[in-house]
Image (cartoon, rainbow, N blue to C red; front, side, top):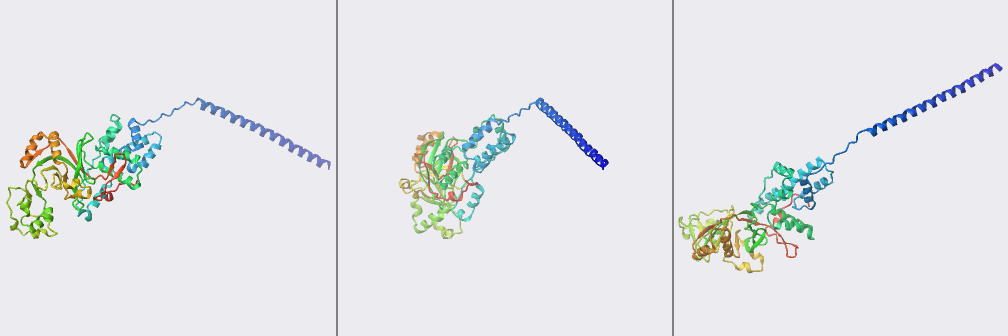
Length: 453
């Protein structure tokens, strides 16, 4: 019994001694691990302190890039169009090579919009070719510029030419272009009015300016003739333009020459619609109007007697060509009046004097949409005087002498003078407010922007 207790005591004592020794070893090991860990931290901190400091270089955008972003802030040339969100994204980016590349891409797009407008040209031309518009002889010339991307980017990235100088090469020369842009923000416009004003801004871009600050504008909706020199109006008067069924075309050309005491080569369409029916009813009609008939529009060509031709067959709806030509000789009764001003175009349209001057004095503007497409002028003699003095090699006494002689004479211009037949339905009043003309030819309806406002 004693022996057993003794053995048990030794065993218990041995157990506790063993436990004590092991615990001391574990404590010792923890201290070593902790010491080792602290040493590593010190070494790591020492390495980090002695590591060389790297300074990140700041990326800078060029002066042209800065200036372009400033222009986009107000959209000074009204050519952001459908790229407004893209501009906001670029503006939010930090300066980087990516930002520079995106700015360059947007610059090319901006130039394209400035040069060729944000009108959906393809859709517009498709609508014009539709039968219902074709029957009304709607002609609207669109002048697009070939944008050379590489050339534009070279100029932009060189920083030798300012952004403004580059954009001004493509901006419309019409003084109302920037006035209309300013009016976008200064006026309280309805959504529809804003769209109309923006559409008219885009129409200025589609004209062909040919690098001249001197030009004539004939605006159809207002029936106004306006002569600009160095951006200022030097002449302004009323006109009579084409009715809706025989519209005055929209185009850009050069004023080439004018004819004093002209003959009127009456188009087949007018002969069919007006001259032949009247001559069939009244045998003296042609003589009273000083109209003769020839084989062609040359007065020296074969003479034709009205009574020798069966004219009724040319009055049929499907007949468009008449093999005999009606010519009105120079006189005070001539439909052209005493003066005719010509510019190259494929529609046989020109400006001329008129015997129906009463239309200019009437308050009813509907009466000034009455021609077959040509433009009747309120003050043709005054225009001849100014053109002679400033754009030909002659003096006014010379051309006035020709005028008084009643003989047909042609005078060529010696200086370049562009002319634009436009369709602008917006105008700015003297108080700076935007107003609108009637949409006589429905272009406000059939022309659309290529993006959503």
